[in-house]
Every structure is written in C-alpha cells, then in structure tokens.
Amino acid sequence: MNEAWYKQAIVYQIYPRSFCDSNGDGTGDLRGVISKLDYIQSLGVDAVWINPIYLSPNDDGGYDISDYYTIQPEFGTMSDLDELLEGLHARGLKLIMDLVLNHSSDEHAWFVESRKSTGSPKRDYYFWREGKNGGPPNNWPSFFGGSAWEKDPATGAYYLHLFSRKQPDLNWEHEDLRKEVRDLMEFWLKKGVDGLRLDVISAISKRTDFPDTDTTNFNETIRRYYANGPRLKEFIAEMRHSVWDRYQVMTVGEGPGITPDNALEYLDEKDGLSMIFHFGHMFMDQGPGGRFDPIPWTLSGFKQVFALWNKTFEHRGWGSVFLGNHDFGRMVSRWGNDREHHNASSKLLLTLLLTQRGTPFIYQGDEIGMTNYQLRAVSESRDIETLNGWRDAQQRGLSEAEFLKAANYAGRDNARTPVQWDDSAFAGFSGATPWMPVNSNKSGINVAQQETEQGSILNYFRQLAKLRKQHPAFSFGNCTTEDVGVEAIFLYRREYKGDKMMVLLNLSDESQIWPLEAMDQQSEILMSNYADRRYAGSDLRPWEAVILKG
Image (cartoon, rainbow, N blue to C red):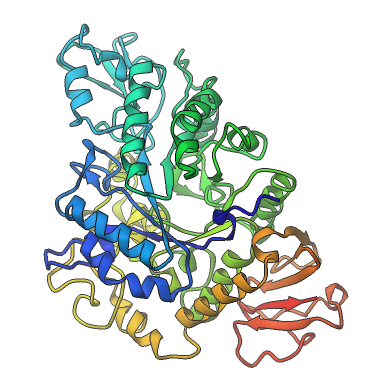
C-alpha cells in the first residue's frame, strides 16, 4: 500500500471567522490562528485545513470568492498567511487551503465582465441561457432554495447558480477559464501550501444540456444532474497533470453526488484526486427536501454506511472520516448525547473518528465536545442557507417555531459559534462582541478547563492521537465490521502487517452485553473512554468505547 503522508495524518479544520480574534473586532483572523499554533500542535494533529480566506463579499461565509489572489482584509494580510504557513511548517504541520472552483462571487472581475453583454470576451466563463416559457431555462432548484437560475437585467438572459444567486457557476467547458484556474492554483502552491481541499469538485462537470430534473428528491437531483458530469474525469486529470503533480500536492475533493458506485472514478492513481469526502452518513437524516426536511436515522444505517465505504476502498482509493464540519451540526449533538452522556459520547465519537479507515478530519471545538447552538429566532441566524430556508418554509405555511426546530437540528449556524477557549464573557475568543453569539455552555465546556482535567475530552483526544500513531493498523489496515446482533453495538477490526486491533462501541444510552463471542481472550485493552475499564467481558456502559489489541 502507498503509505502517503495524508493516509497517516490527522487533519484539524479551522473556520477562521470563529476560531480566535486577535485584534478585538469580533471576527476571528489569521493572527488569531497564529497565536494558537502551539495548542494545535499539542493536539497531535498533522495538518490544518483552513476554510476560505480570500477576498469575498461574504454572502456565503467566504465561499463566494471575488479575488482568488487576495486575502480578505478582516482575516489579515498575505504576510500573515506567509507567517502562518511558516509557523505550521516549523512545527511539522501541513497546510491545506480551501479552494472554491465550481463558482465565484458575482463580484469577481470575471463575472462583472461576463454580464456586460452577450459579446463579452468572458461571457462563456459562466453559464448563460435564455428563459423558457416566460421563466428560467429549466426547473433546477438551488442548494439554498428557489431556482438555480437568476435573470440578469443587463441582457435579459439567465445565469446558473447552484448555490446563492451571488455565486454564479463557472463554466469549466471553457478552456480559457480552466487556464485561469490552473494559474490561481499554481500561485498558492508556489507558496508552499501542502494540500488543496476542493469545494464541490463533483459539480465542475454537470449536465450542460440542462434537462429538467424529473425527481423531487434533491439529493438525487444533485447526483444525476449537478454532479458526475461527462467531462469530470478529464477536468480532474488535466489539473493533476498540469499543476498538482508538479508540486506533489495532496488533493481532497468534496463530493455531494459521489456514491460507492462512482467514487473510484475520482481516485485514479495516475489521473485522480488523492482522496474524497463522501456524504453517505451526513445526508442519511435528510428527507427529499434536503437540510430542513429531517427524517429519522438508524444506528444500523449509520454502521452500514461505514461498512459500505470500507468495502469500496478495500483494494484501491482513499477516503476521509468526519462526523461534522462547518456545514453540519455539532458532532456530539447530532450523533451522540450532548446532555446526560456528553463526556462519554463525545469521547466515543472521537474514538470512531480516529480508528475508522480513512484520513480523520476533526472540526475545531469537537476536541472539547462543543455542542449545537439554539437559535431563538430566525433573525439570529448568520447563514444564507437558513435565511433562505425560512423564506421557502413560509411559502409552505410553516410557522417560525416549526422551522426553528429543523434549523436548530441541522442548520449550519450550529457549528459556527466561536471556539470556547475559557469561561470569560466572550469565551476567550475576542475582547469584543463576536460576529456570532457564544454558546451559553462556555462555562462548562472550554479549553482552559479541560487542559487541567486528566479525564477531559481534550486530553482523551490527545491520547487517541498518540495511540493512532503508535499502531499503523489505524492508518493503513483493512477494516472489517462485524454484526453482533445488537443495533447499538458497533464492532470493527483493523489489521495491518500483523498489527491487529478491535474497536467496540456502544452507541446508546443503555448498557449493553459485551459480545464475548467476538473477543479473543488474549486481547489487551489499550484504551477506553471509561477510565476504570481494566478488563474485557463486563457490560458496556452507555456510550462506552473500548480499543483492544490482538
């Protein structure tokens, strides 16, 4: 097996706006990240993925880029970025930059020029189409609600935006546009950036004949119309051969629409990405209407997602493991119990993250068990997806209370509250009122408190990181899930070059009988989230995680 660095790495994700504010303006910034580099190193992680820090009008939290070559002033300067990169490398850490290449901001110079006239030299950098029957060119819905087409008064034509109307989709079919993309990637790689996280890469090739979608299931529309287009492999191969290979850069593609049936097409050893994010588990509780249409999920379904993807990558390809990020609710609030079993379930989910097959990505604050933030009114939201979702919900006749129930479960605001560094007024994040409220549980969940507690979630994560590095089976080993006949128990084995591990998780609020038939009597307990676990065989307590060797 190719023992590439990223297969052994633990990646820490930073949403800079909410990480640490160095200048007291209420917004996190690059110097704030620099001030926490020793903390980041102390976690035992190997790389940092930072969300977009480019110039942007911030319609969608920086994922609407107006200049790919300029740092957003509220985050700092290019010299700050250079210092951050130098500081990471001095500590043996790598930097993964987030690039948004499916769309730009409508304030980007390309689009400003493109919309001027039908004869503009950059007209075809974007998708412009005439309307149909007095409306948009087709019935495609946007990720953020409403139509995916916006009529522009300058020429009377419509442009495509799969996300916000201020995020027009780039037309990768145009060769000059692809050259622009190659140039901007080269700019960042010349600086020494070690990896690229490629936002919505699955949609850079789409159905350019633009047929109507024939399904009301939004995730199915993504798979069949927005993603996995006919030239996707070609576009990825072109970028790899012309840019990525020359810098030996790691690339991870975000993949709505990627399934076990098509994933390996993205990961060809010579022409593809290094690895992907898939959303098998992240979308399992979304109904046909998407994010704000939650449906029940089951533990058996949750376990099956991991088993299916492990099977997909059994012989080739590489994936990631994540349970939360800037686009989803907090890990422990979604998959665990953030009330009675906050400590144990946070630790169990971290155990899952660092022992499953694939590169683990941990989102800032999850190492201390940060929880969802409860909006009291839609007006408190800072997220365009939630605000647009409320507009659509009103058209369907939902009350604000009904919509808030869905938004507080699945909305993106949940993960974007400031990191809780201590229990001071603004949680040590800033000396001024933050851009988004601090979670009210900061006094009980914060870094300063957990630094000094031997049994804290934070120190448990550090122990896990050390254990992962000590045993190559967790990085390179195969992963086999075993059905023990109890839905709440998740049991899987890892093995690599004679290094054998068993992980046993109780994903419930109830005690469960230890599955003795699955246990080698010679197994040694390496770690558990219950400090008094000394031997195998006794009942698994609520949210107990046990790692055994042998």
